[in-house]
Image 1 (tube, rainbow, N blue to C red):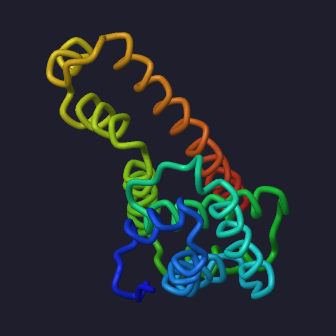
Image 2 (tube, one colour):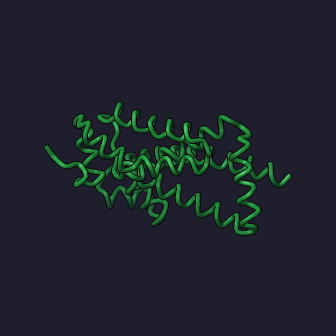
Length: 194
């Protein structure tokens, strides 16, 4: 018998992968409130926010043997953010979300671009942390250090084709996730700045 509160997130996730339900419960208790708060802050719907958190954890449990996560907290919070964006996109003109967004625009005035830029940077950081370790390393070397695929292949002692495939997978995933986010931002801005 072990005290799951003593384990870090990564250790709990390792136990979850073996089917340890107590570790799963400990991870859920540790993160559900902050995930709920992140969803509720944007959706203003308690039931929907609770459902999203539960669905993410159900999916994590069901795919525990398939999912590789290097940063559990980043993975969970990225998952909740993307669920919120998907929900708002499905609802179209989500009145209470748009009202809150309009209030924020009025309150922050010209600082809105800075706030949005910070939000995109934060989402990008979470997405990068959730990448598989090797893909993250390749992505960071290429995009943030400006290394060529040949240089990365030499440094990591892998084939250039592997580097290209990993970069292609990362950029395709990034483009798909951020296209949705940027599309929502553009729609919201076009509504308020007609």
